[in-house]
Image 1 (cartoon, rainbow, N blue to C red):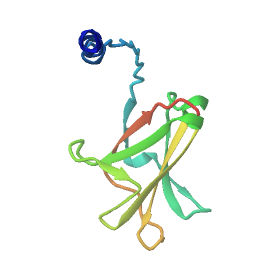
Image 2: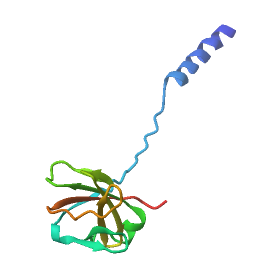
Image 3: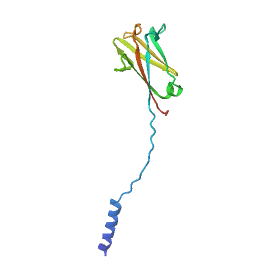
Image 4: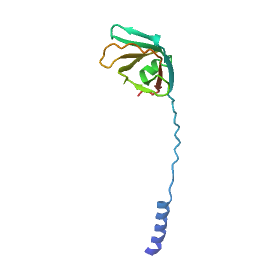
Length: 137
């Protein structure tokens, strides 16, 4: 009698063990693309700042709104030929390039590596600004 009950119980156990239910979960992902904006900073765009003793170029960027200023990442690259891009801050040929930004504007600054005043570039500096969208935490 025990063996007659054992066989159905084993078969029932096998059915539960080897049959599986899969729960299908549908997730909708929203991808927010980055914004890339390119500018040409001409030689006559550089101005001298007496306080910092550096030359700077102001680049108006309408995409750099309050939301982007507070929540997004801002990356800046420069090039002299639009083929090879260098991320800044960086030292290029003895010149230090840095940037700061605020709502509506990005500022490129140039100085010598030792912090002394460097003459502004005599050729155009191509600038690529990438706004990396991010949701506030």
